[in-house]
Length: 353
Image (cartoon, rainbow, N blue to C red; front, side, top):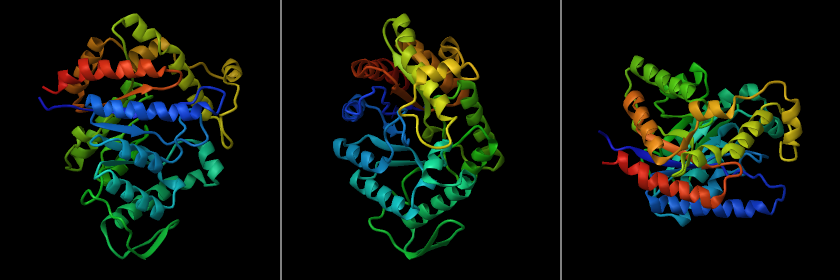
């Protein structure tokens, strides 16, 4: 049986009213990153969000460079850089510098983004995001691998450019493509020979459906399936007491779900000062129940429960790389660290024999 790999995903949620809490949040994130390396996680991944309490990391490269300076061997994942929001030349340079500073530990996740209001705030037509994403990725890959690179696109142009530094990893750092629930996004990843990233907040049946569709498309195109390189992310919280494990994250998961749902109603501005309780009372549709999410989306339970669920993922769906998002919403730092410890000491060893 192949040895599985394990990742830790960090959101950086900001739930308190005071902005002073943001420094503490980043400090706790760094402690979790360092502990993940100590515990033997293979990688960490950070999410990019803009003007949001959901996650307060608007620019990944500076934060990932900071992580590179505080770690030695754990791989460092961008999960993901929203390409239409960047000048691709600048992002190619910054990401290459991160790969150098980390001694070749960058995993570069890219995507087109899904928040209307972020596009509205950047004054970018959301209908152009597919073309912008593909052009930006063409340019980044070209600048990483070629000298005197030129490119003529609809939105971006490059003429006879060589960047410095160039990435340590050859031919370039691993690139992952975030996919949505549409076959078209999966087809783009297959066409480019890229492993995919899926959301940890999507119901498990939908996520596994995307993995199956990706496998079918790879097989139809005669391409190898890079299943060992595709982290399958889930919300995770572990405790020795099953009832505690299932009940403690309720407030945090509910906050995450409610805020994410509200964000999808915005076309500009932000959700930082929204009265979320008031919006929940007047929202047009009711969300899925917490109990249904316990069964179909999240991994909240004892270490033994988690082992059984990951075994099913491996044996029935071929998952070889599992990612846990443990710090979200109101989750207390000490409890997150304990959950990480339980996962690393009682779950991960079962899949590394």
